[in-house]
Length: 105
Picture (cartoon, rainbow, N blue to C red):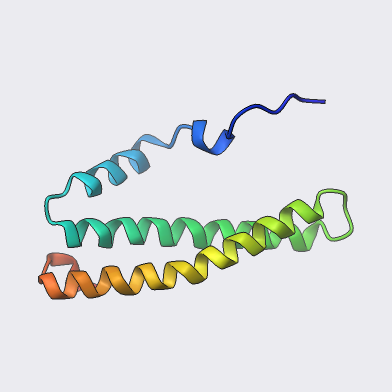
């Protein structure tokens, strides 16, 4: 049995390119573009998390760890729905600021 201490997600290092992209967005003085980039990163990450968690929950139905995977899939689905609001607001801000991300939004 392993001893559980601390949040492994918080202590897990990100790949350098992901971390660099997040830091670049945070440091971007064009704040509307910064939130557009951060919302895009978060949206893609949470959508991928939901896909993986849902797939694993379906594959593990009836197994001992099914409940944990199903719980993760449900939480990720909720986050996907909340991300819709983040994406909309970030898009609105970028369009209003006329930043370069507005054409793609």
